[in-house]
Length: 236
Ligand SMILES: *Cc1c(COP(=O)(O)O)cnc(C)c1O
Image 1 (cartoon, protein in one colour):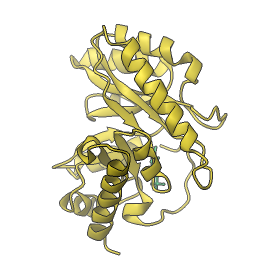
Image 2 (spheres, rainbow, N blue to C red):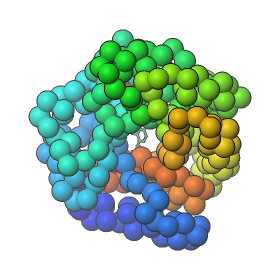
Image 3 (cartoon, rainbow, N blue to C red):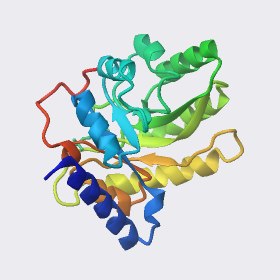
Image 4 (cartoon, rainbow, N blue to C red):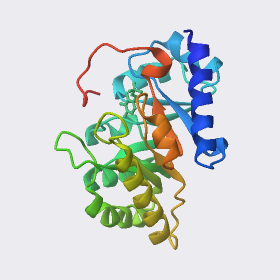
């Protein structure tokens, strides 16, 4: 199948899952996970109707930004971000989805202050409690969210998760748990300057279930671009 057909198919699947759950399909945004893709492929994806690109690796993203590859689309950072690289990401992306520690949060705030801007962020939750994954533990989420809304140069927009991969509906309970955390945090932070409207969860293998459980952003790579060569999960 061509990239164009894949984009159309994934969007159709998202819309069908949304309707099935009684949701308006326009509530959900497809984020194309563009890691390892070339400038040409990313441009083709945007021409085929992709409106948001999600990047994992600072170095790749920087190269694509230099060639204006993302023109016509918004840009999210979705990968593991080291504090010594925040200066290459803050102010260059519309949303940093993967903020999982106070250390990183304060580094982003500091860099955004230097640039005189407010950086939109999501807090990444380690919903499966996996040692190998980054993200804040669900029981520590509220404290981190309270910290985020105190910082003047970040705006908390919601939550992100990469739940454990499990077969046949096996991770659907994690999506449900994330939705609950999302509703809860939105309510608890209602008095603050936060503007919590994003729940980012679901990838190629499970985005339809994520939509059924309330995702507003799904991050899809393989189902759009085909299989990638293997990589280290935390490489950037
Ligand atoms: C690569 C990646 C995705 C997309 O994964 P696929 O299984 O290829 O759809 C989503 N989220 C993050 C954080 C990723 O790194």
